[in-house]
Image (cartoon, rainbow, N blue to C red; front, side, top):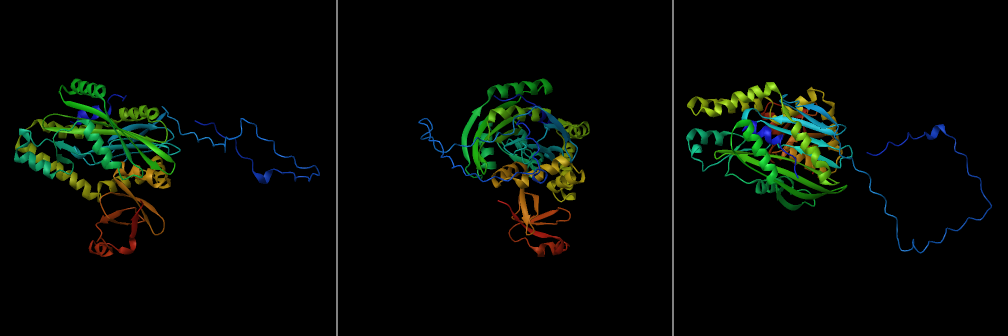
Length: 407
């Protein structure tokens, strides 16, 4: 499934303004004063017949950041697990979460004028295990699925129904959200199935579909398009997602999404670690079951030692002093609520702000968040989470500030 996932990411494609001259400083140019004139002020010309009834002249729409084929290489700052080519001059983020079977990659890129957002991946995507398959009836498999943070029980879903559900679940809370429907992509599915068969020798079910939608932002109506692919066998299946939203024409930017997806490459070191895990999938034994459990515990330990996977991500970004990532989060803070929410829904994050006006990114899943402004570390809980909880955790409440989720 790991190889198949990489192939799906590399699958088939679906279906600037000139610089203004430097302004001249008013302090260096003398402007002659106007000389009063005794001549009568001329009357404005009478409008012609062609001009009458035209009303006010509508100003031209500002030009949007155009599509580009120029790219720059980004490296996952969290685990150094992959590289990806992102558009040059755009604000981009590339990160991974989890380990072993829980590993997920996400890439997002925002145009210079924030009119277009491209993305590949979703850090919260699960692995699906088919409950009706006889191989999944054993106690060992059931224990593994029930224990895993990223495994769920589900019969296979075709991409059309899956991507519609994904889009609704992610974006339906956006202002003015309207779902326009889905379109099957059988040619994409056939090409991906062929690529998987050639690389692995396995015959798997593959379906692909595109969902279209729109939502409102302060800058205007954003048009969205998401391609979903579902693939797998009778025992397990998985899904991949990529898409965009733009003030412009969706079709103009879809090749950029596909190029970004195709360029994503796993690093050799990470591939070796993943291969060691997935090779065990052929060994139906108690030893393999114990390895699954050990891998799960290793993944949970990785999460615990970094507080949460999101905390590891943020700490790694700043530790690496990644200017492009810093620019990306600064850009997020300047966006209107709808476009910022669109990005947060993909990333699985909230933007929160304290009483001093400082903004922070935190993982979704809590109602109340405290942030340490000195370190950027966050702690969250339900509506009852308070300073008393910080004290019970052995922390000094004066080091932490209560924040509110920015809506």
